[in-house]
Length: 388
Ligand code: 3PG
Image (cartoon, rainbow, N blue to C red; front, side, top):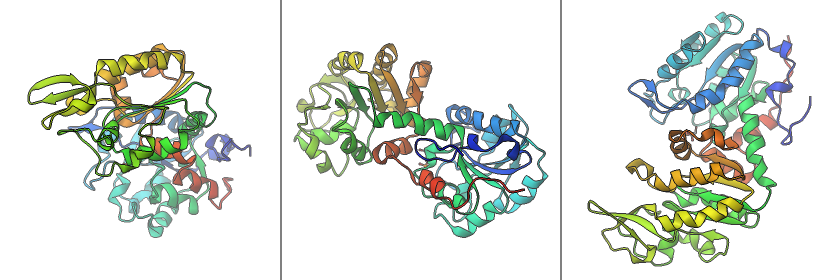
């Protein structure tokens, strides 16, 4: 079996004829936005289709496993309805029925298991749940890159009991995001969004390798706080001292101006001139324009996190930067749920070289070079050879 650069065992390494009639547990990222019972953003579903189609074409029997949200009552039924428009789908309400339903499927047939987080033990990587799931199938395929930073049963537990391989999308994520480990230069990283501590490991890993790191969005507020600026009502992390080592770092670019809301009025200010009733919701024009020459001269751009408060309609800077990048010659990689959703609105997703399905998983993979789900595939005790 050929090895991929990360020694990953891939679905495409298996002889296709071996898949005929096999019962496959396919872990996908089908946790998509749903409003009033209807899928409103199909990016993650569409990204999963090549693996589904590949397995169906080989005549495998597929049980798709995914989580949805954090509340146990959330249901994957709307996703089943979405998929039904593409191919027949049976819906399996609980793991207890999975084995018999999977055995009943015709070759190339598909069933979707209800939100796996409804099962006790999914989030605690419970051994009994892993065994129950594994008992119903012959092969485990992880194509849920965006969930592979979770040490949950359906991500890290199953490879202990089943031959395990990575799906097509998973392989694509690893291959494309892995480009950041040997990037062409100038290498530009753009970070936005909130929760500085989730992006800190990435900054620490790349501060030497990258040529510039832009820190906009609410992430920048941690720096402003450490610089002693008044932040008014702006969103800021509780713990900001972690920003200290990077405060005056020559590679770090912070916003030169910010767009603040005060009552019903919007002002553009320099970050050190806020008053107690101001709320920063986006960066200003100078900050946006400052990025244009940097983006134009970059050869490789990695972007995660919206640059303004998207939920409150402040998407001007995110859109402008998306357009700068799509018009540049740089190789570009973008990821993160809100970032991708905002670029999708502009209809320019296809102008990026790679759009990651991952949010937290993308950040963790970049920061550490691996993920719990990836390690589980690598250390699975089973060789993914299917015995008859
Ligand atoms: C994501 O949506 O970022 C991942 O799929 C993980 O989902 P979770 O944050 O609900 O664990």
